[in-house]
Image (cartoon, rainbow over all chains, first blue to last red; front, side, top):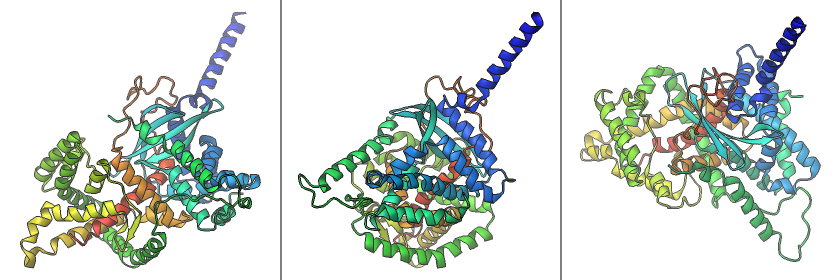
Length: 203
Length: 311
């Protein structure tokens, strides 16, 4: 009986460790989400990662840690409601592809920066985590703020604000400009995104 | 300390309000002339860019100049001088800027930063050997950007329409006017203007080196943003305006840690040993790309500062 009991206790212990170590548990804390993202991103960036796989891996990371549908809706702005439902669906998919292509390229220049979470606090509809990117060459650190929303019990990133510059707002402004310069056609943006992401080999 | 969430968050609600109002205005009152085809929007986003056609032409011209003159010069500069030398040069140029930064800190009523600026200038000019070593930065008082355009913004002067100036790049009436005024107020410029035949070239060299150095720092970042952008002009416009707005909001420091957040342990709930621990490589991953974008905004204002021939 005592052996069985010890075994049971051990099993419980293992279970407890497994449960608390799962990333999902960390997702309950916004600051930990950002820290986790850092560890995951390191795998995406690792020198041994085939450059051709970078975009696909980055896209997966983006889908897991970011509120992709919410961001897509925000960056399309007023044109979201103008778009047809198939257009909306295609846009969300192409937007995720585009972010993967654009940012995995930029990350290829990664040269030993480290991220330090410096604080977090509640924001009106979620949480704001502030951090610094410490650069190896002694340049002053860059300030990066992360906006997170709680979605299905987990925190998802909705915006990245670098030195006061919002990536979501920048993207929204660019997309609006593309649509407006093409006679207000949402389809023109979709076509441009298709073209930009065509050669990335994401599917 | 300002409540930053008040500055950061209302963006979305405010934008969506604008969207609603514009939609109401443009959709007409009772009778719609004709329902627009699906996928065609009625309302226009306001970029405050009434001279967009002219601005885009100048932007294209600047791109040609950049491709054939500035970028090659920046590449040559980067290849010719080792990084420590370039960093010393940057520190030296930053130190020359401190008197104007002090004036603007004071004009904005930001006496804490004004004091920092004085300490920086004294330390770096003496122990730092005329500014070539940023000792103050190493001792925890980092350099901060500041200019008269920001001061005017703090005072409530609106930016005015977006302008792209030949060679100087993105600007607006407020920032450009402020820059011209600053070039007259710069103590070093005033020092050399009395000697037109011997020293007149100094401000030009200073501006030129400053511009080349800044351009060199963002060579890869800007090339990358240009390659991946759908509309490079619109991206730069947005980056420039947001960056200027952020400087005016004084968002130069990180948020204070929330109560219960300790530097060593992080929140009790944090996995992975607490978020305060530097994650090696970190989301520097996810955000160094983003940092590049901000860098672009800085470059934009930088190139502008650098090629301020009016000095």
